Length: 170
Image (cartoon, rainbow, N blue to C red; front, side, top):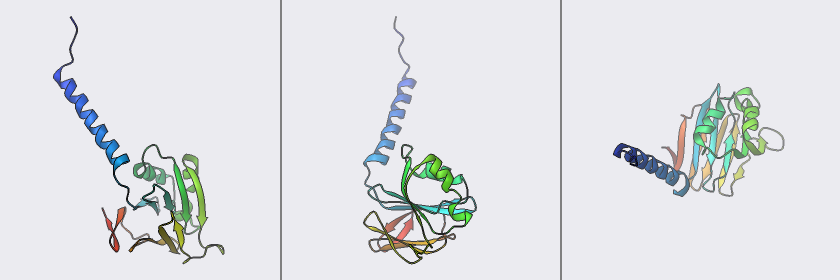
C-alpha cells in the first residue's frame, strides 16, 4: 500500500513555493528605480548607488571588511560585480574596505577624487542619467532628474529613492 504525504506536508510545500514566487517577482520583475543605500561600515561609511539599468556605483568603502556584509545584504546574492568605485578621500575610513571588495567582487573602474585629474566639485556622469558630484572627503551629491541627495558621514543609514525634487528614506 503506497504511503501518502500528510496534508501538513502539502501545506508546507505550497507555502515554500509561494515565498519563492514572491521573492523572484520582487527581484526580477518589479520595475527598477534608482536607489542610494547608505551604510555605516566600521569607522567610516559607504554608499551604494544602483541605477535603474542595474549598474552599480560604490562611493567610498568604509574602513574594514564589514563592507562585505553590507554589500551582501544590499545586492542580489548572484551579483558579484561592481561597475565603479568612487573614492572621495585617501584616509582609512574611505578606502580601508577596498582590498576586501577586490577579493570578493569584480570591480570595473576605481576613481580617486582629489587628484589633479579629478578635483573635488567636478561632476561625474554615471550610467548616462545620474550625476555624482564629490564635494569633499566623504561628501558627495547624487542628482537624478530634478532630485538630489547630499551624502556625508551624518546621513542616516538606509535606502533612499528619488521622490520629485528630493530623495526619501524608504
